[in-house]
Image (cartoon, helix red, strand yellow):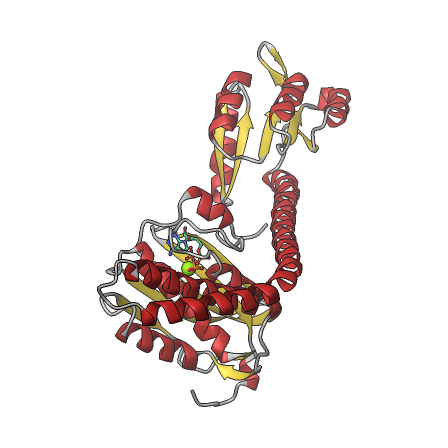
Amino acid sequence: MTGRARSILIVDDEQDFAVSTARMLRLEGVECLIAHDGDGAFAILDAEELQVALLDIRLKGEDGIRLAQRLRAAHPQLIVVIMTTYTSVDSAVAALKAGAFDYLRKPFFLDELMSALGRCFDICDLRQAKAETERELHLLRQHEAMAQLATGLSHDFRNMLAVIQANLAVLDQRLAPNHPMKPYATDAHEAAGTASEVLARLSGFLRGRPHTVVPVDLRGPVTETMAMMGRTLCADMTLVCDLPETPLMVQVDPHLVETALVNLLINARDATGGQGRVVINLRRVTRGADYARLVLRDDGPGLAPEAAARALEPFFTTKAEGSGLGLAMIHQMALSTGGSFRVANAAQGGAEAVLELPCLPHSQDGGTNM
Ligand SMILES: Nc1ncnc2c1ncn2[C@@H]1O[C@H](COP(=O)(O)OP(=O)(O)OP(=O)(O)O)[C@@H](O)[C@H]1O
Ligand SMILES: [Mg+2]
């Protein structure tokens, strides 16, 4: 079992047994919700996101196997472990046939229970990893489809926009300041300028510009970008930077890191009305290999539910003026360097962005200066 908090449902009409089992499991880091019958079990599963149930085969007035079937029909993700007695092994076999994942014979030792639950939690972890991989694949496919579409369109579009922009510039400049058509020409000229900026951004995002990949101590670009943003776009915000004392060497184009940070800080500024507080934390983490983990947390209202699910999708935006490419670009950069990126609501409120990039092991970054 990993150190993550785990929760299960216990369905047993013997109250003392259920309570004492829950107490023992809590000591092992497993939280339990208890139901004494089918109605109670359904009520809990409707309200809580539980994936594992420990179910007694003999409930008063209810057949445990039927209940297991009904619970799984309503909650197909539910992993059911049936508790049986020595005398009802046949029923346990029937329970397995009915879709229960495992069974335990009462009375059982805590070790047996924990190893059965450990197998259930392993399945939960695999499911979660699969869902995350599918989501990344889905996003990558979206990127690819758009890259094809945009490559076909952007060249012609850029040429047409250049002509529109040039003509509007002439009109805008030639019209006298008090001419009644002047504001229309100015607006159209500015909008054409914005359109070509968005197009340039989109082409850069989809095709990728040539990158200069060099070993960089991440503390450098982080410090410089924070200072620059603190003087300019985030001047009224509180920016707190928590950096490690030793170098964190990453093979990356430093410009990409700066762009990522600028995008994240602008999002934080937008979310907090330009007055919020942002804390940036940079650390080395080791998960098989070494990663530089950059966490940026703001004290805004956090992501709206739809944004929490779709923020990394290209073009997803909730802002009138947004292009919805900021986070998608960071995500693409993270994946292309073998890292990862996610955005979510922080437990203590506000939004939290986590960027992880592979970094050189501690032994190999020896004494490089910032
Ligand atoms: N710090 C944040 N707090 C709350 N919501 C956020 C935050 N950062 C991003 N979001 C949500 O995620 C959406 C996507 O963000 P993203 O940066 O990709 O695009 P954008 O900011 O809308 O446009 P742009 O392309 O100009 O960056 C935002 O429109 C917003 O709804
Ligand atoms: Mg943005």
